[in-house]
Length: 338
Image (cartoon, rainbow, N blue to C red; front, side):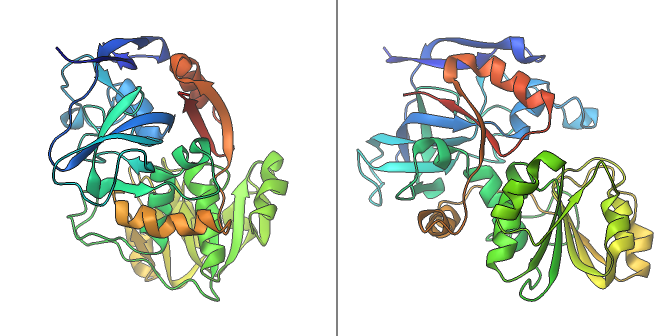
């Protein structure tokens, strides 16, 4: 008989109230996996997209999972067991990971739980000097910013475009980050600055002090002036907000520059971009223990920091999802499970 654990399970698509904290079986591990005792897990947009049944996507992309399922990809915790082929990690190691993304995006990766099984290749030692809460807030947002701006790290086909995404040189360039206070945005600001860029951050006024402290050279309050009207001839715009009308940024990018779309759905500026020789590109973030290890050194040294919007006990995941739906997040929402 399987040992039991507590987890937040989804029995039907819908609102935050559908998330139930209850007993379920503890996962088993394969030969190349480890079992992680979860100390903290963070929320990411795919969590609430899946909770809703990905209804914002075309119907042919809607999932058909077997309920109940457990949401969540980002975890930080301690290894409780290791598979027989795993030699790089040991019981008791403190680790963090983005679990099985995007491979299990439609069925739930299992992070909102006491325990989660993780392929060893997707695991990295937790950066020294930061708590599990901050480590759990990092993986998806950090890997997204890293794979857009530093190194893709894989050659998997891009589901959104016929060519692989390629980062562009940032040293000495001007980078505008739209949605700079969010999970991906605040890390993109810091990584672009670390790579030697001049960074323009776009967010609401309450985020100015934070983003300047994180390295932003210029700040635009989007409620007062449209960012695309306030600047011109930037080398790169990374739009971490998504949605329609991202093509408006084409007017402030220099000829031969680039527009990176974290969420490319709804973009309709392909003709204008081609006329201005602007590269419009996106990529699907993928789990990578090796990249988490490399980027984790920046967290370890304090070169980049994970900002925490709010913290909730795992049992209050439904309340955390309500917070996510209210918008205006400053960094990441984290669930604790100490």
